[in-house]
Image (cartoon, rainbow, N blue to C red; front, side, top):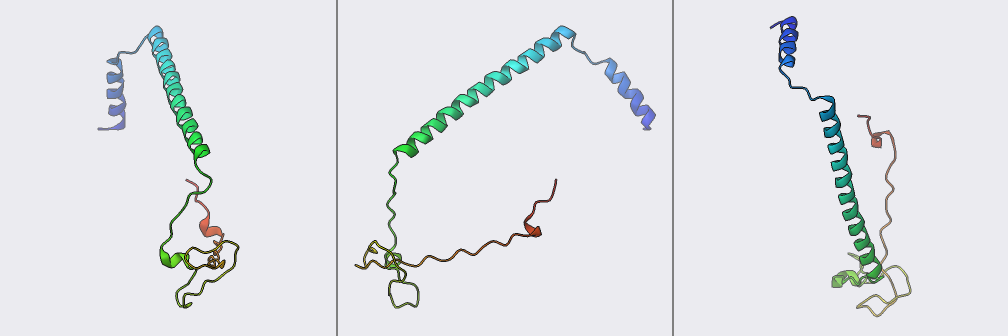
Length: 121
């Protein structure tokens, strides 16, 4: 099939299409716009309700959530330290009777460079 035959057959098929008149186009367009508005209002209402509910839950939640640590983490001991708490602080470490706090690991900075940039799509 050549390109000219393809165009000729396409034109023949387009003659069989039932095209809507101007009034039908207006009615269909109005229907789509109205349905879009209704769906957006519906989704917006649920988004508002869930957002308000979550805000209320966060507001009512206690400021501090107690976390139970395994016994070996509460001592402040690190592997190879002989069980001696490390670091400093003001609150007693649970299970040790001392105010020494375990040292926190120092975060390593992430290198920033051209390999972390996004490629354009």
